[in-house]
Image (cartoon, rainbow, N blue to C red):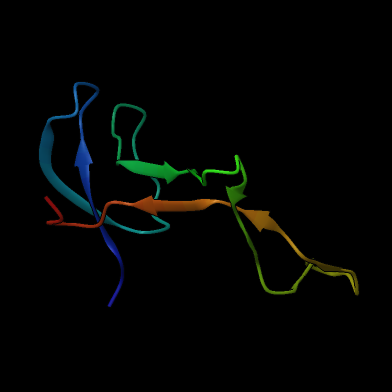
Length: 77
């Protein structure tokens, strides 16, 4: 089952339309994304190292560092 996103207008009003992740949206359509940055009492940031990912058409592997990002899926209110 695909991950479904609620579509919003530029004023963050739900339009009633949904799309599956990976589908193209029109220029006036939006979906919500939240990025969380966590810092402890020692001013250290919590980040995670992604699994090894191979570049397309290459033997080179990439280990990416990232913070947690979350997309709001359909009906999460």
